[in-house]
Amino acid sequence: MVAAEGWARHHRPVKIDLQLRDMKTGNTSHRAFDSAEACETWLNDRPKFTEVIGLRSKDVPDGVNDQLKAACRPLDAEETTLVKQLDQALDAARKAAAQARRKEEEAAAAKHREEMSNLAPDAPMKLRYLFNKGVAAADATDTRTPSEGCLAAVKAWVEERNTWVEGRGQVVGDANIEVYPGALPEGVESPIISGTFVPVTAPAKD
Image (tube, rainbow, N blue to C red; front, top):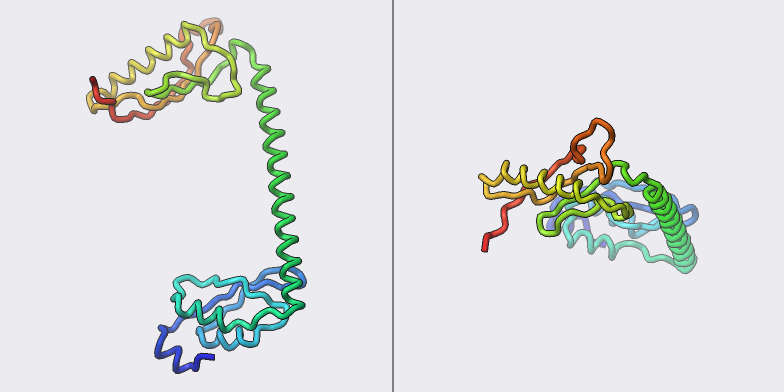
C-alpha cells in the first residue's frame, strides 16, 4: 500500500466515490472517501461479496485510478462465480428487453402501415421537398400519388419562396408541405394546406 505521505507527495488531494454492487442481490450502491489513501485502505480489505464496478468520481488522475485498481482485493473463487452469474442474468435481461422493444416497434409499425393503407385517396397528405431530390411522400408508408394539379401547386409554392431568399443567395433546401393530394374539399381552392421550409445556399450555376 502506498503510504499517506507518498500520496501527498505524488498526487494532488482528490475525493473518491466508488460505484459498488452487492454480488448476492445485484443491487448497486456507492461509497465516498475523503481521500485516495482512505479509499486504497478500504480496497485492500474490500468486504466480501462487494464488487467494485468503477469510479463515480470525475477528474481522477490516471495514476491515482491505476493505483486504486491495483489496490483492490482480487475476487476469490466464490465471488468470481457470483459475479459471472450476475453478469449472465443482466445480459439475459438486456436481450429480453431488447426483444420486447423490437416486438413493440414492429407492432407499432404494422399498425401505422394499416392506418396509412386505409386513408381515403383525398385525405390530407404530407410531402417533403428536397432541392436536390424533388418531392416525395414524407411518410414512406403513404403510397398515394398526388395529382398533377397538387404537384404543380407544390412547385409553385417552392418557387415563390425561392424568391423570398434568392437575394441572400439561397433557395428552399428542405420543405415539409401538407396538401390535398386529390380532389379538393368543397370551398377549398388550393391543394396546399400548410408548409414550412429551411433555406440553404443556392447551388452554383453552370
